[in-house]
Length: 56
Length: 220
Image (cartoon, rainbow over all chains, first blue to last red; front, side, top):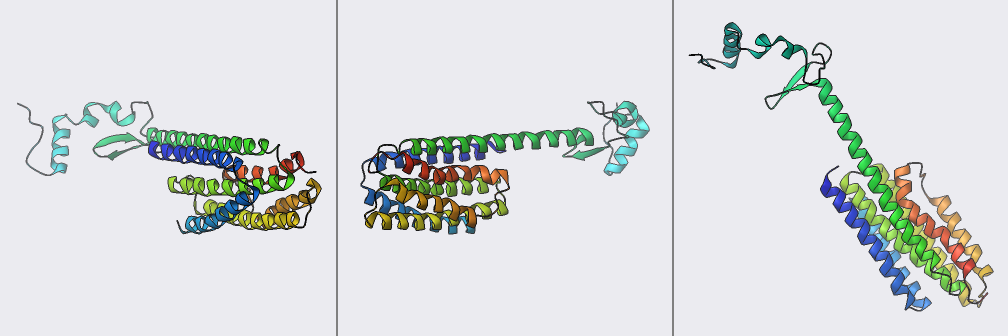
């Protein structure tokens, strides 16, 4: 396996772990309604990302 | 004085070297019957790449070892990525103890959305690196689509229950169970362990909602 690809996947994973941690921290200061609105936005973004993934 | 080449074609020069006894295959008979790793030419044979002589058996073993190494690297990396994401998702679920059931359910839903987002990015990365093929990517994408739809339905149902004035965990638990069922019914067959590994974190986040709602310490 190309070392560059290994580094690329590892960085993607690390970035995602950091995103999840940031997501947890951000939630603690939000009202439940704000969290729900954020989740709505995330789901809409996910739908677009799924389309982009299928187009790869 | 002995010259190496004569004016002529390559074939002329090979014939010339055989005549003069300087041809390596003639001068060193073992050279044509054995490679450096003692594989017999009769069994394996040689071929030439870039002017270098390769023993077919050596090359076959070398290719097999390289493939095995690449496979192990991919497996290790996939496992490491899955374990890391899974660990963070478990931390999310564990952190949902001091809240009411409604908030626990909404936070769980937001966690699933975040886990799907991460799953999509990891899948894209795996596909770009060749770790996932087209079919594996399509299976993962279908799963992400199903989870997203079920999650939106779940969140709407949770909000409706909350707006109806219900506050106890018992009001939200059946909705959390419906979410698990919705995903189970709609999701594609995840028999491929490679794909299942990437999706494990999302599955854990979905199943963790019931746990978070049950553990909620607020309004019961």
